[in-house]
Amino acid sequence: MTILLLSLVSPAHAFCGAYVGDVDSTPKNGSSRIAIARQGTTTTLTMFNDVDGDYESFGLLVPIPEILSQEDVRRIDRQLLDKAAAYSAPRLVSYSCEDFYPLEHQDTGWGGGSGSISWGCGGWTPMETGGARSTDSIVTDTAGVTVWEEFDLGEYTVYVLSAEGAGGLSGWLDDNGFAVPETTEPVLQEYIDRGDYFLALRVDLDRAPDSGFLSPLQFTYDSPQWTLPIRLGATSSTGLQDLTLFLLTPPEEGRVGISNYPEATLAPDECMVEEDDISAYYETKLEEAMNLPAVPSLLEGRTGLGWVTEYSWTGGSCDPCPSEGPLTPDEAIGLGIDAHYGFHFTRLHLRYTPDAVPSDIVLYSTGIVDNDQVRYIQHVEELESDLDLCDGATPDDPGSCFTADWWGEKALGNVEDSVPLSDAAGGCAGAALLLLVPVVVGARRRR
Image (tube, rainbow, N blue to C red; front, side, top):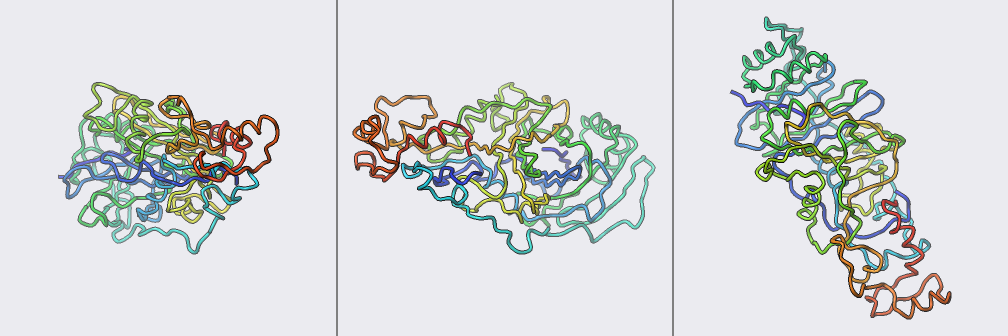
């Protein structure tokens, strides 16, 4: 999490397989989703946190780089973040021989049949912007804390604060019903010394629209630095935190990375698995890459911070698409990016223990515009000659979409571009796989 929890007193000729499943089918406890749209120095951050525990009310404290007004803070529909999660999730797909037709036989729509971009009407609008109860003037208390704004927003009561010192801020929070762990004061002081302000959010779950989750809260600010303040939230960690970032940038800026922590290396994907549900399988690969499990009880003394890139794609297409379809320009606008000239979407997955985050994460645009995703393929015997098995095994007699007679004719140069396949090869009608595989399969991340 990036916040402190307080108790209260693509190209046209890609594969065209079916989207079978992803790892975001159900929410996970102890996890957060954050969307960040960045255009120049203008940043729009949307945070979505689950509620792990039996609480009626609690508080959140978020460092911010400048004073925010009511117009800068809003609630949005949770479905928008759910759509971003489904669009970008690591996925299990199913291919057949027909998906390896030569280019002239393939559908020339965007991969996965998403079709042309639809702009829709009206776009996404916030559920509610700040209002109801605003201070007419700045109120400064004797502890050196200034309250710049106070207003109600759904289940949130929002305070915009600045402070001269961590002790005074902790005192103000305590006086207003927030219980602040003593261990947070040194980190609070670092943010104050840096010139940050704070959003203090009182949460009343009785006013929340969905049990177990808060309304996604979105705010826009201007900052020359692109950072995400995870240190403050780490001070209240139960031992392990899991964070998914959805990052939207102008299309020419490409994939987003983290500059001050090394990226973990996932085992190769684009290979075939026997799994029907990819969630458990992918979790094993994620744990191997990060050396961190999904839950604190399995840490067994391990510490660290790991992150991987799970999706990086130019907006408006996907390969293949989930049933919800791609993230549309209207939906990207709802997350804060001006998508009229396109956008690039990056999904990063972080997992970390509190002692492994000496500094907030620093994000940057790499300029890499190649499409990339984590994708596994359901095992099909006829594709064994052309796709690796994820477990590294090599079949003794690998299946093929084409008969031995066909390969013999191919070696003699007697094969045309399109040749029917025999029933012995799986009964699918196909084309010269050899002509397409070096382009599509041999070149990983090829879209």
